Image (cartoon, rainbow, N blue to C red):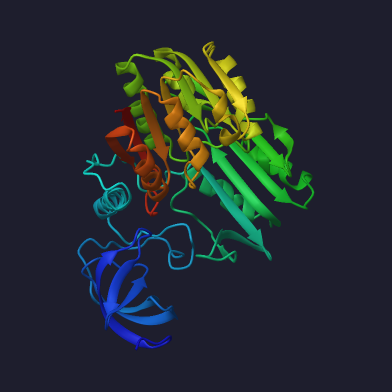
Length: 406
């Protein structure tokens, strides 16, 4: 009988979808973070449930050759990374296998997953949110709301790290600090704080901050920063969603644009359109695009982006997708880029009723993607499953699926 706080030896036999190793002790399944297949470890049990236990590594008896040195001192505590102990190729294989396994489990079809497309493994994030709590600034500890103090994040852009380090030196006291940087070098800062904004204005001038908000109020610079994507410019307001990995984002958007360049499509419905990025990028190759988005800042950005890029064949609807999906008919192709929760039942059923020629499903969670594809696969053939490693050193992976009407 496995007991909490007791130590055991275990061999890691497989991985779960969140990057933890799985071993078995006398028929009892145990999850161990920071381990890899084939490794033999001594663990201490920290939690026991009826069906499984959780252990933490006490020591290694055997390590795999795919293990690499962890460069971040906060890896064991911070909730930001899960795979930093895995070498780059192992991470990519893990994500490809994860998608394959989920598709096999939920969809039950023999679907080919294309080799994952990737970019840099460090210093790739152009946006980061730090949390403040009891005088500490950093990220949340794994599975808690307790802040782990962070002096440097190895995933974010080097300039954002320098700005952050300078900022915490100002004795920042608040609940949230968001930093964002565009490929054109413009930086946006957003704070939630009770401190006097004048404390930060001189600092903002020194670091050439383009846009500075405190508690939803613009206190310095302009309302937005500007991003350049495949020849188009996009304005980003503070609460508008934008992909955090610029270089892999370019590859993903080019993949989608290439699809529409090769097809004859008249009307595209772009659901969860955000700032209108994908819709505007494909607009030169179709007759008309309709975007739907619930975030007001995103739609405000989309309208400005339409004017900035002089795109005349795109329109936008502000509101929840599930509240407006019934309004659309005679749609040739649907693009969906939903949140991690995936598509709601009403939206899926209505898309099936609309019966477009194709669906481009952009997913940030393979589990909800596989769940939704299970329903869509009765009506559509899954022709391409293309993963993109948008979030190296984490278990997250972006996937673009192309579905063609049967």
